[in-house]
Length: 223
Image 1 (cartoon, helix red, strand yellow):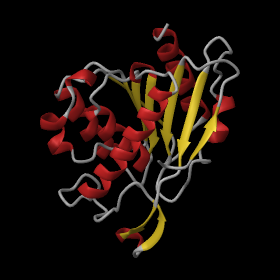
Image 2: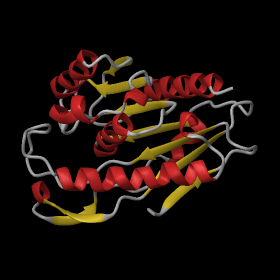
Image 3: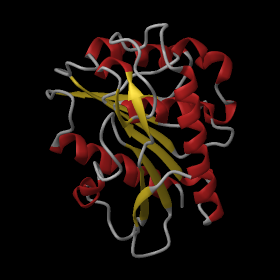
Image 4: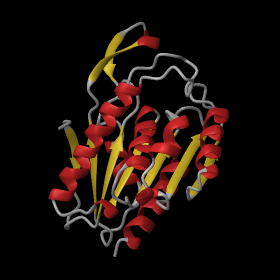
């Protein structure tokens, strides 16, 4: 089981959000965002921020850092992807989901969220998870192994809401890469809500507000 940073609500959670950080960060990266989301006390949400394992990252000269998978090619979404690493991290996310289930939060009340690499894993794991999830939050990211989604996706999550947010001036994962991923998801029939912001590879106050409103909607839908 991955080590995690957990932000507990005052009451028993109605919703759990498993939020994956980006390359080289850790589980504390988005911990400070929680009080900025505007979640009311009437909507108790548990936030689970796991730490990725350390691994060598090829495009960073093989340096070891927290990463959900190796990045072999600077052209993200190219055929040269670390499938093994992606699948290993997806399996670890499945363990976190199972842990929430054991604590009384059913899969249909769990949101998978992630930024950059973490968002890629959230998409990969969420679309393939056997049980329906409450939603998938994809931030400044892309769809990994996109050519295998159609064959590997779970029917249970065909209708799961996806919020896909991106920065217009992102130099690391370009808006063109994000658009290609979005178009692939739409072509496969996924329920996709997308919005872009005038920011680089980061998050903004407006984006955080939109995330909060979306999570509140997921929380209310779980009643």
